[in-house]
Image 1 (cartoon, each protein chain N blue to C red):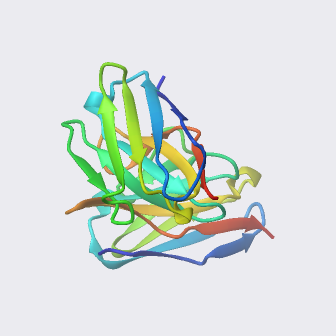
Image 2 (tube, rainbow over the protein chains, first blue to last red):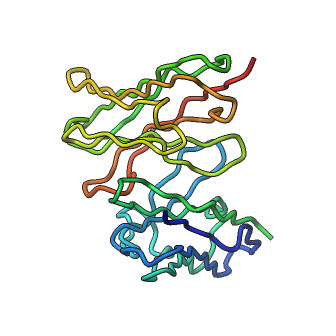
Image 3 (cartoon, rainbow over the protein chains, first blue to last red):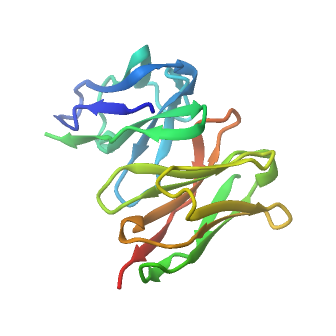
Length: 110
Length: 118
């Protein structure tokens, strides 16, 4: 069973800074099936990036995804106040079908 | 516009049953992967179940044998029948639709809270 481990669990940064969020898989996975979500308090998650690096159309280009194999990264180049939230990586395992989430990284204002 | 609206949550005693509903608009549930994802208070996201466009269903090990996902294409609804509920099933339950390609949930409802407590 694939496990996704996100780090750090909490990241304290200031607006304007660069954020680097990590997602590590317990075994090599297909980057095609790796996605990132943002969740703000009281709201449903929002899909940001899929296939490891493809940004959803309406998502600002300061968000970027990268990685392959077991190591994936979500980078926010220059933090805006609205970016402070919890971020989850997710893998779609096809055998058997399951959507596996990491435990999340909370990005908070320093 | 794609929209998902869940209903059916509430307070239920341990061992009880509850059925959650999710009505979709702006698309057809018969042509999409539909999921239930839950989030316990203060915790992360946990996938619960998926129903494929062709009707195949899959459930997380934590709910297998107790929960069942189904759909009614005539009313464009997806359901989650939850039996033998436990305190650890307490969570906000989200209905989510995969994007055009499967494996990522591009559309989410607002969630419905299920509280299992005596």
